[in-house]
Image (cartoon, rainbow, N blue to C red; front, side, top):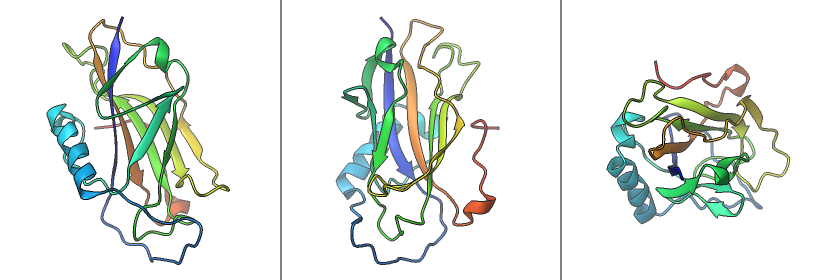
Length: 181
């Protein structure tokens, strides 16, 4: 049985957005202790610097396969990941959840296997224009349809779920079609 190690996080770029009053969508962000735990898991798993140079988690990304939540390195069988996962997150402090949009990306830095990752950063999924789960009227767009996490090797893979805040000029935004150079 193959297993997968899956990590989730939110990282941000350094652009600003005005804070607008929100009555039904309170920002909860992520505690400093949890952000440190996420960052440590990414370093221990060598996600930092293999896939991302560094992270500063600002809110927690929740990813779920059927009834199983991702949790910083837990394992899944290939059968458990056949269906597209669901994901959600709370508003980020300092950003209006009704106007701030995000891109969800899932990659495998170990494809086809960790011993010889010649397909490093294999793209499994990209969804953009995603908003916090409290926004009922959001219209996310799929850039890359979900590819089940089926390995070409029997070794465990690291699968990474990432959430990035999009630039405020959404009409000009186009998500990447692949990760890396």
